[in-house]
Length: 108
Image (tube, rainbow, N blue to C red):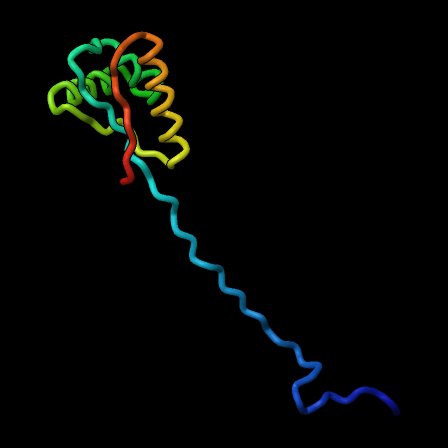
């Protein structure tokens, strides 16, 4: 009878390969901020918050008052790309309507 014998040096034996997944860090988040100025109408700020940040009128009004009273307010927290897009949209919209409204972002 001819056949293969299992070798004693470990060849031919099944081995288990355990792969560990590298730990992936969550991407950093960025706060989008609206800054107060003395010229942009309050109604325009409310409109911006409703249009670009999906806020209800009541939420937008509260944030607008915070911007007005404290000089700045966080209007949302997003990934870098989304925060950058929101800032650009708000700045373009304000410029098109000839308002000096400032919108910025900073790492959380």
